[in-house]
Image 1 (tube, rainbow, N blue to C red):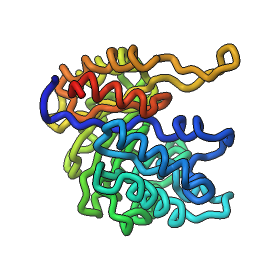
Image 2 (image 1 turned 90 degrees about the horizontal axis):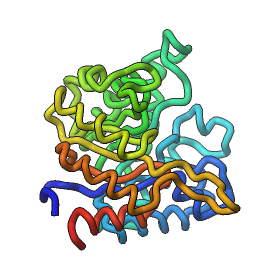
Image 3 (image 1 turned 45 degrees about the vertical axis):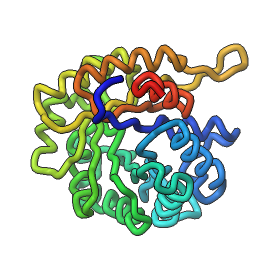
Length: 279
């Protein structure tokens, strides 16, 4: 058994919901159009031992939903409510927030004020459903991450902050771990780390480098791989046992929060629980 302070997170939301339906549209629509599979996934993660469950709210901002018949408020509040209904008090519920689908100035046309307004709208929509955590994840731009964190800081909740890196240790915007950590100074983060993009063996050296720059608790949610069609079956790059074995060295790098991202499901989290906690 590893340290007693380890917290087991869940796995992927998007790819796991796609496993449950032939509809490959935006998964946030399921909150209103197919809520049963959203509850089902949250229940599966809680049954697997995840202690914090992501609500299905990741990409719900006004730019993403503007062509849908639904509002940000409707989708986000439903997502948090469904997660809470599914897990009750067995696990905490995290309001998940992802990056906006456009670039900030000077690389794009989005101003900081506009970005803050959109993040504030998304986060505020979920607060009445009483999430336990606000999770900011899969950001590639440390500046956009800071804006999202400033919006999250309006609410008295723990904030988890994760960028997604390439294997050279920088985001596709060229932002390093050092830049990320320094950019977040002064904000009330509860944990910081990485998710998505990389498999565990390539992500471990990156999470290990965080300790040079921060004393905050570390989060590790690497990819199991995006589903690909092989011989008529959908498969991912890492099977359950390989994924878990390759993730465990992160715990020797002082990681406290651990789970999976794209391609992982409840089976991955159950196996991780068994390897970490022996049960």
